[in-house]
Length: 385
Image (cartoon, rainbow, N blue to C red; front, top):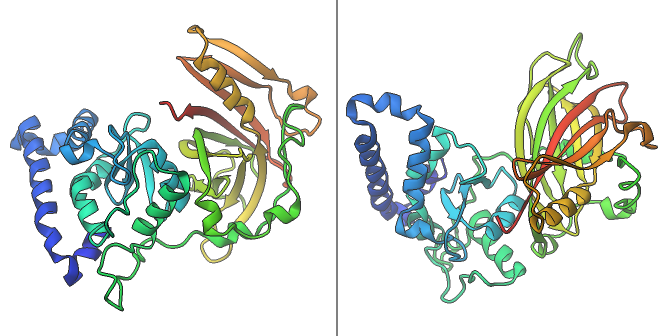
């Protein structure tokens, strides 16, 4: 854990006391809820995990965003254990999951391990004592700060850890090396762009020169986020063989500079993931890219096809729905697979309203591969939520 590595440094030994006190307070809460005799049962009870999460969120220091002070934060940045607002969550996602994993208090299902990570961190008070120990005066951004100021501060605070030690020391604290850097082998593949439906065709295509190399960090820090997108990777069907008789597939999704991947399903050509991933939506809105890989232990992962989805129609439908009075399940739009000139749709794609949410179901034919389909469901979450 990040906390263990930093507490070993002499400059930060004083942080043991507040963090330990916070953990003891959480332990007392667990004992009060289930009693000492039932402690093992309560650790695995989802209801108690949710109660613990709400308890942590209601601590005085956790009622304000750890980064900008915005009240009533509804997101958490792991493994730091900080409660943050939705605007700061966009920057945390852009850091990559190898640095900061962002989870919604209300939209995501929490595991006991994730709740325990928050409890062990000490909350916003201890997190800021640690990562803002030597923050220059008046350098912390306000909740109404510019996007550039917010992103610059968060990167310095967590990624580069510029405020954890006195700048007069010539040997600053080393960056946390626990998390391995992202696998660059996936970035070396130049995939073709595939849209689906007449509405999507060529609307988001870019010049090849625009895709060469990563943008400078200063450019990334200027990105404005307009919402969130939940991507449920449902399943794959009749995927290509990349091992002797089968494959070990996983899916990687990309949206702008953000990327996430599913777990690996061993030895199957028809994997069922039912795994939900969440990304921030940057402006301008890029296509959602999906790549399927076969996990190899001793060599580079083999490609098993890719596809792209234009998410702008879903975002537009979500915005329209916010101002509507529709409450019943309703089909808003349908793209016919038979009319898809690109041949990417395996089935008709539908944008519909269900349980008050606007969702799109898509079954894609993987491109640049001999066979295979991927079924996904996407849902847009406006920043207002």
